[in-house]
Image 1 (cartoon, rainbow, N blue to C red):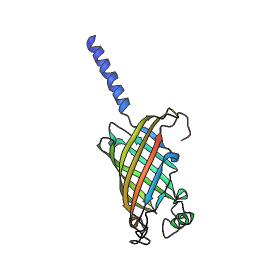
Image 2: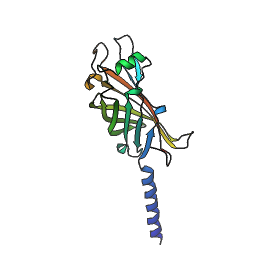
Image 3: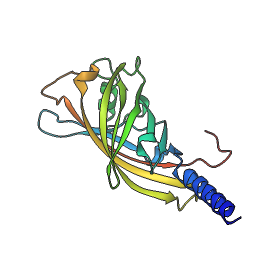
Image 4: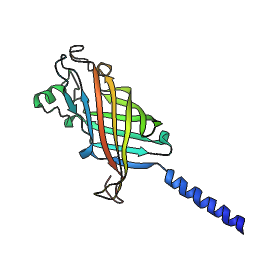
Length: 197
């Protein structure tokens, strides 16, 4: 009888640990997500623009980060440099050609823990109809119940670099820098049951 109790207890503990370790799926919050990119303008200044996102899904497994993933869609209609004339120019054919390629997307291919709250996220970035691998260095800021909604929530920052010429966006290189710096911050929540996805 005692053996049976131990077996049942072990089974319950195993089930609880499995449930705790299961990946959690979050929806990114467009209102608290910024995908900033910056460049050198003839060496005089370093402008920054925000892609903004329309939709994003983050799957995070803290016990086994390799099972985590992220997928994001960024419509060029949301592109914001704070200079309307520059917004319009960047959407023209010599840069993003937004009429032909209206979105930028990122889909992770691997997530690796670097220890502590730091992760290496590798994924496919598609810009201007070209897909190339990009590496992001991500930091987990916080996870827990959101104070406004009570829903499970999570937040990350991430940085990375890329060459815009790799995506067919090489206008004015090298006077306007080829290297683009990425600086990302995001919040995400588990949607409430029955909420529209």
